[in-house]
Image (tube, rainbow, N blue to C red; front, side, top):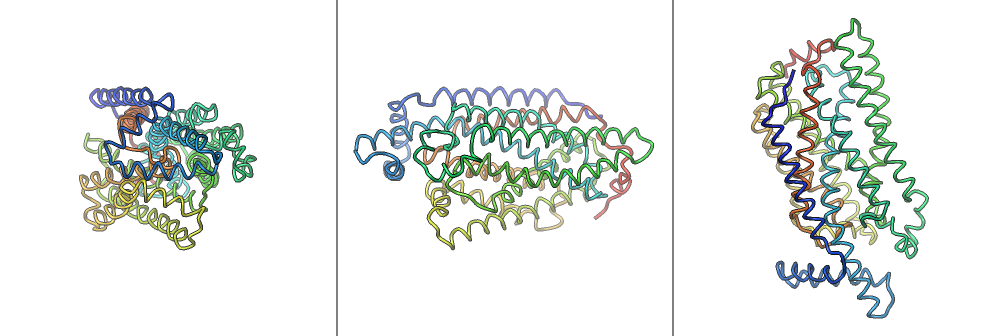
Length: 444
């Protein structure tokens, strides 16, 4: 049995406390009126150069002109109100990015776990308890994400512009989508997704534990059938979730690849965390029968899915760039102009680093090397979600400051506490899985 050390537990509490303070500072420092918003923009311009600020303001001004009267005063008022909403969104967006990022790690692990069950893989049963521990975060993480979505529907923030009746009244494109993009249906879908994912995790975990004490393989077979059916449910709901929770933040843009793109990001992030937790447990003298070949296989997945993610990123970018349709290219124009560093930095962290660090087969067996690469991959995919959400939520009024760092620290602490607390609830190694001996003697 794994014992949650006081040192790690205290560290998780400290992360949550420091993070909560950072989140609170972010909300308290958000402007409450246009005058305060102007002061923040002016201070930001002084610190980062007047030229960039002026260009950004002119771009936003031009966009608002389409939705405001031709009169100068109305135009200026609409622009100022728009900037106010962007700055008020900043702490909400920082919270949402971190909340979704850590939730998607658990959701990615759930998919990997279901695939291993459905494929009846022989190499991975020794890692099942690790995966079950990580997916325990689905409950608290899912509840927090759902509450943020509820707050959006309740107009406590402006993350989703299609939730603003005034915007919808002047936007024919959004009006054509109100049958799907409306608050009650949006929350009903979110509740349905979360219920299905959490229900599978709970029942599969129950069957997994029951198999340890069983005299036959009935529970194993049930888990196999359940996992195969769940993967169909997962593929549909994960795609819809990516449309709802991320793509609809910019309701004027869409990509038919987006569901797969987000899946690749969460899948590689989840596999990376499985590797990191496994290596940590081995360093504490647990999972003795997990060998270099298991770590090698996890690192192969980290490498392979990183390449797959890059393929999807390039396919989406190349097709939009090549067709050069105005309503499509604005998605990338905004990110390249206003988010140049995180946009291209994300590409380097998610593709170039994993490619160079994990291409050599021998490096995949070196624990510290896998840990170093894993940290780079997780940082890159945090930026991936940051780039997906922030440009539409806060425009050019972005920077990684106290709200962003505080949110990451809070959810990292909550994630660590939830995962390692869950690992204490059952033996760290399954006992009666039919493939457990194959897993113990796995060699690549």
